[in-house]
Image 1 (tube, protein in one colour):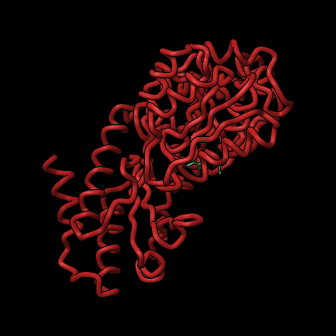
Image 2 (tube, rainbow, N blue to C red):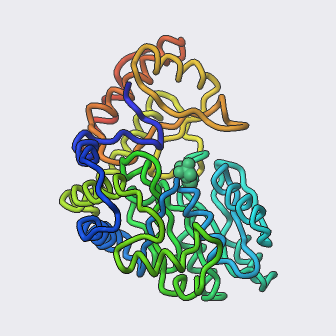
Length: 367
Ligand SMILES: *Cc1c(COP(=O)(O)O)cnc(C)c1O
């Protein structure tokens, strides 16, 4: 089965092998050297001032960012399940919040956010997805961050980059916290969260809040190449392995390849009459709106051994999402596109003539 969901992504064989070594103790110079390397590579990759690794899924880093970086009120942007989650986190912690809602295909409105900030001076943090995976949507985070900082540089910009980290070069110039997760573009198993922080964010953390997700305790320990509690040693070993590999490949090269492939895939899907769902597409995935989504996905799975993601809630049966994160073999994505076209032919939606593959290949070669 080809796993083509936008998280989890497949774990390459060499990375799996690197994690198959005997467990080492986390309070040893041996592990501290590995941890140091993970920090170095992440700081270089992200360009942030500080980085924290948490033994949790991505949501743990979302929660720690919200609780440690909000003092009075947070503005959350809800254009899907993950944006909604920021509001739920605030609510669970009795943190005052205001939520702006958008359709799942619609990017956040910069002016609306600016007006909200101007109208309510108690807002001291904003949480938004760079790529909202629910609808494969890209928010204009850079522009929002820039405008907000012009009004008040002390407002913390919390960016959920779980499907942006390792996908595109994130412009962190006005961002205070950027969140990543192991199971997306890092091609690792789930269970490790990454949190990049600006100097301003580190200052705001101060003594930190909460217990397990108290960033002050973690920052203190992690600067000494250890963790406050038992580190996710196996995942961190895998992280160093993949980061070294991506570093050799070149991060810029990774971003260029991902962009080129993402655009070629979208073009190919459109060439066979499919419609892209989001008004502004995230590079992490191709999201197609189609009434026959359940039938298409079923055929992809049963006949072509391809697993793509469906939608959630109101979009459960009307969108499907094809992953574009990580190192993907051209032959595999070509197979996926061929399978989508074949499935459409079998459902009498169009004739099969190899258009998707031709357009994809032309786009990759002639671009
Ligand atoms: C996958 C994902 C998350 C994190 O979910 P976890 O299941 O906690 O790892 C958060 N935000 C976005 C945009 C995601 O795609």
